[in-house]
Image (cartoon, rainbow, N blue to C red):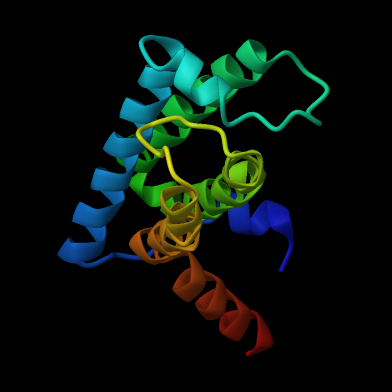
Length: 151
């Protein structure tokens, strides 16, 4: 299956729990993105790893814009939820090094002021990835497409 076909195909109907979870995740992403651009910029800058060769504020602003866009897409593009879900999952994976960096460097931000709190937080990133994939039916959609192609 080509990437173009995955990105342009329409999703099949979904369940109410998945729809609610998708919209909730979209709202959470849009809220977090707005926080990136406004009152929590310094807190988010604390998560940018020192090895990133771009200004911390630019990274925070850019990721905030991306989060708002992904959140809006989760809410407003239900027929494209599978590729959007894949993009959201990829985004959560891409920002995970920031969480690791915050733990390794012992940087306080978002009330995470102990190594234990920062360590426990690391286990929530896979939950976000799973939430994105489940709520959008991305894994199920890819499996169905793979099966239909094999037929």
